Image (cartoon, rainbow, N blue to C red; front, side, top):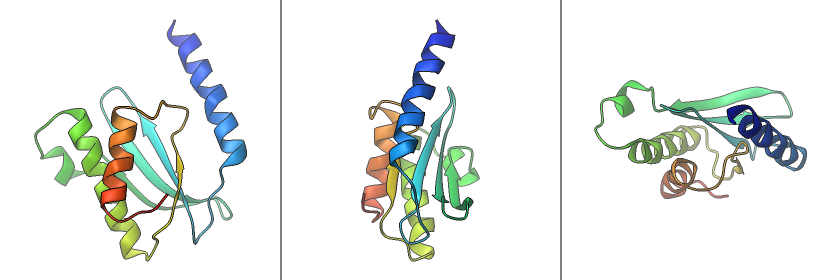
Amino acid sequence: MSNAKSLRRLKIRHSIRKKVSGTSQKPRLAIFRSNTDIYAQLIDDSTGVTIAAASSKDKDIQAQSGTKTDKSKLVGAAIARKAGDLKVTQVIFDRGGYLYHGRVKAVAEGAREGGLQF
């Protein structure tokens, strides 16, 4: 069961990546969701470099109490803050093959509230 699920996600992820590519002015906001944590990266695909990253394992977010969805919103706000420091206001959202629902949606909402546009 889990193998079929992960293969399905990979197929969706590859079809998304065919269409989505980030630049230094408009990087790709890539999401990875594990069972316990969530990670967000700003990636410049023209050079293949991660510009900024945030995750629910960061000390300030891990210290917060709340559900995984609450922490995901904090991850979105943290990546938006780091993007603001780099003077990046627009990003391309890459949900990584996950459904736009729950924790992935919470990261997107947190990033939008932090000032990112996508």
